[in-house]
Amino acid sequence: MGKAVSDSSDLAWRCGVCGYIHRGPTPPESCPVCGAARSDFEAYHPPAAPPAPAAEGWRCTNCGYVHKAAGPPEECPVCGAVKGDFVPATAAATGEPVRAVGTVVVLGAGIAGLSAVEALRQASPKTRIVLLAREGHLPYYRLNLTRYLAGQFSRKELPLHPKTWYDENRVELLTGVEAVALSPQDRSVQTSDGRTIVYDKLILTAGAHPFVPPLPGASLAGVHSLRTVDDADAILAALRPDVRAVVIGGGILGIETAAALARRGAAVALLESHAWLMPRQLNRRAGELLAQYVVGAGVQLITEARTRELAGDGCVSGVLLDDGRTVPADLVVLATGVRSNSHLARKAGLEVNQGVVVDNRLGTSAADILAAGDVCEHHGVQYGNWAAAQFQGAIAGMNAAGLAVEFGGIPRSNTLKVLGVDLVSTGLFEPADGSYLLADREAEGTYFRFVLHDGLLVGAVMLGDAAPAGRIKKAIESRRDFSAVIPGGPTVQAVLDHLPE
Image 1 (cartoon, rainbow, N blue to C red):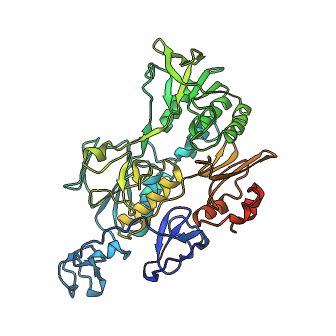
Image 2 (cartoon, rainbow, N blue to C red):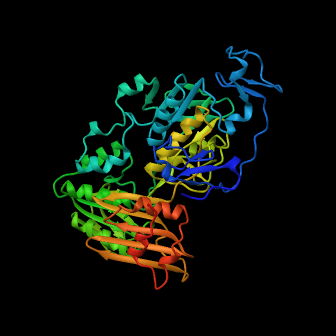
Image 3 (cartoon, helix red, strand yellow):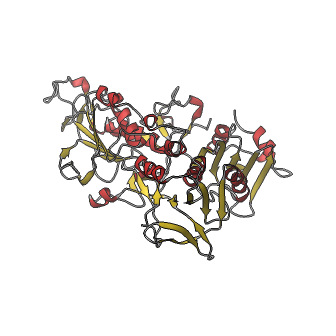
């Protein structure tokens, strides 16, 4: 466990799993957001202390009324709460709970939105919760779309909760409805079905949309993206015996999509513009080893394949590459990344970079609006993964209930199972210069790479064996000293033996 900070009055601990920040002399027994154990907490040193909020008087913890005076009133004039139920109005910024009342609107029903709703309802049983779901279905596990495409999941297995769950938890779920305008000035949302919903707090979890490169032919029939269950259904409808499918993009989504289509009997080609798969997460050798699994799944892999255009007359018939080759295609799936759905926030005047800018409380630049998941940007980082969206959503929901919880960020790490193969990539996977040291090992279907700098472990790649992942993450987070294993050149086994328990 990391060393405690010197000022015992301002000790803070960050959960290494979900980024939740706990303030107190010791870490909690378990994380209230993700359930991680006390041992998963490390001393947290914030990058910069936020400005202290101005004193506003005394806040009633029962109804939220703020009494503008030097001391609390004998009785709340709104709800009748006694003097002892008042706390300083700045308490919400220092960790004291304030039970939310009124209406909280959640825009977006992906995992960030659902996690926000779950956490909010648990923290505030009386709050009215309105959840807008743009898709006309119950909120579902987007992570399982490629498994659905492969025939490993049925449609009825996708929803996160049955319809009865929303009724039992008094969540007003509006499916097939999206926000078309947001007004922070009068705290209202205009919806696609003509409603105006006034909120006390709003949580923006609008997610992201597929990035479609500006390629000639991208609008041809037969060209698809995979982001929603309707996208998956459209791809399934286009399948027929021996259909020629091309997937463009060798990231996780592209690999899983290509394998799913091959499982369905399609003749699949996977195109990656780089020299190896997952170049943003893996070094070359790891990417080459992963390629063996892809080919073993029945997928033709073409690397250094830069797409010039999609050919066809009304319907796609092939993918033309920069080197002049044409890959025949009856079906093309673009797996070329996503962009955050920040248009509502931009039009409403919120601060937006690549995503909606949020602070440690996941608050935006507009009062009473929070954001979580793929739509937001925290300290310059857009995580773009399920785990981060889930954790941020829970913390945003708790903050909407007045619990003043902080998100301290999580490691830029990918712990995945690709084609049934365990894969971990965290931190640096390539040395920045000659001062970095590498330890590589390839044996018995596994591959390990560790990157060290100035006696510290700064990155790791593991393929085929993810068992040490938690200890590796802890070693990086706690800045564990590996100087003892460096003389003579570090080895993978020496690094593994020196990992914390």
